[in-house]
Length: 418
Image (cartoon, rainbow, N blue to C red; front, side, top):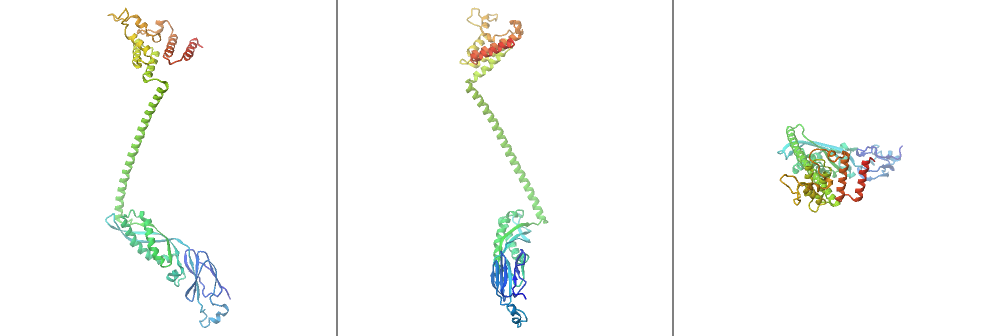
């Protein structure tokens, strides 16, 4: 004979309510309740005690040694009838739901009536064990997720069919944009359904609309979808054109800015050269011309033109103004005060050419070589030009005496072959 019963939960995690299969427990039986559970003890059809996690001793008035005697008047059944229901208090998630045949009057397509559906998930938790057992369980032995969905299918369907189309129409959302409202729709429906379930001792912890089912076979839906696709394509093309034009404009601005910046850099470099060397623009141009004069191997007329250009370029206060003015005047003009003045023969006095500095003495425009007129070889003529150039640079102040001497020594060593 079993003196004491051991009562514990033997259901699974998808169960909300589970009734222990045994009844009429002996007094002093042990009740084991796990964490996140509750156990409701019924005695003679009344819910007496609600036990939390732990071990509890039951006092049932059923005494093993006296049961046969006590139960004789009742045909062997205990007059002290008792039961135990276990309640799972955990939040149970991923409970699927879904409905169809929801009439939606699309406000953006002349209130055309589309048939849509909705599906999603919810999570539930037992909030009031006594209320849940009294209202939903009754004499049932198990209340699981499938049973809960059957119980609440009607309120879920009713609220979604009435509230979902109304919210979408109020927001002016088309059938092609309903996904943008899923979060808002879920929140509104959760509030309404929570009130419905709370009366049965169930807490609706989460409620999600995951998908809006659309009438893919509806001819008007197909037509409206094609038109929408064409409009989107045109809009995207226009946006691409705008972006391309904006890109080209920015590239043009960057290019122009680069050119302007380069010009500024050129100006800054020239300004730095003038500031560092202390030369004016006219003087720098004069140096260039003098360089050409020193290297000139052409005719006398070329030299006269160059000399005149330098004279005009430098002005009265230039570095070479006096020297170049003498060159230009004596080369191109006769000495009007000279006794042997310009005659009708067009021949200038000899001293007009003699007054030209030796460093830039003009060649005769006869095409004869320097060796024929001077008696020097080509090497000596080249050497003499280099010497004349050094003298000019020293006289104009571009070379110091020390630098002039160093360069002269180099030229002499070159002639000697050293």
